[in-house]
Every structure is written in C-alpha cells, then in structure tokens.
Length: 204
Image (cartoon, rainbow, N blue to C red; front, side):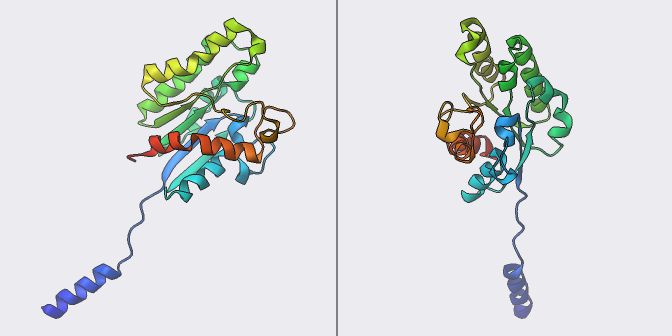
C-alpha cells in the first residue's frame, strides 16, 4: 500500500498543470485602433496584447478595427466582429461620425445599441471616448463630447475619456496626416490605457 500511495503521489506531482484559457478580448473600432498604415504587429490590439502578456496576463486581443468605420458601421457588423466567446470589448468608435458631422444623436443611438447588445451577452465593455474638433463649433462639440460620459454612467460601464489622450496634436506621435498614431503613438496610447484595461480584466 505504501508503494501504491508513493506511486500515486509521484504521478500527481509529475502531471502537467492545466493552463487556463486566455481571456478573449476584441477591440471594436476604426482606423485609430485598426493600425492605419502600420503593420499588424504594430497596431493597437497587437501592442496591447503584448503589454498585457508582459504583465503576466493571458489575453488574446483580436483586431476588429475597420478604417473609415462609423458607430453605425460597427453596429451593423457587431455579431460577426465580436464572436461568441468574447469576454471583453474595448469599444473605440465615433471619430468618423464626428469628422463627417453626423448628428450626435445618431452616434449616441448606435453606440448605445452596441453597448446594450454586448451587455445582454455578458460581455464586459471598456468605452473609449472621443472629442470633437473645435472647428465643428461649440454646439456640436458639447453634444458630441457628452455622448461617452453619459452612456458610461447610464450603463454603468468604465470609460477611458479620450482614446488619443497624450498624443493628439503631437507630430512626433502621429503619422504625417496628423490624425493617426504612428508606432510610438500606439505605444503611448497602450501605456496610458493599460491600467483601465487591466481593471476591466480583473476577476475574469
């Protein structure tokens, strides 16, 4: 019997540990997160995934960014862009709505529908905010800028107030168009938003 117990104990210690499945995360966005004019390994989702893994978090971050996409476009592709099994979504949409001068009420409606549908599926959401350019005027700016904090409060989801915080207007961190982050800009965005992402991932 002693030999049997010893053998069983040795097998137990020798058995490989079962690795936990990686958390499945999707970045649903536009060109700002898709990696416009950048190789895919330099796009925001890939850089974020490496940053999280470097801190010991097992997370797969899928790139569901589409250049030129509006909030309505994101809603229309939601079901296939965010597949079953997704646990967390970083929602980064609205910049193109603003640049095209789309009525903020329409942007709000599309984003709210996305949030509602994701929450019904049990998906955690981090809402990345956007700010209107001053050239669109105070009235438009006030209405657009209010969308993100108001939706975050209404639906009790975390908000990262401005996705381009720290890089907007900095030529060293943007491509020549002055709108899209370059490699260094993406790295800066990731480092800034990383604590908010980790908070959303906690407990999964």
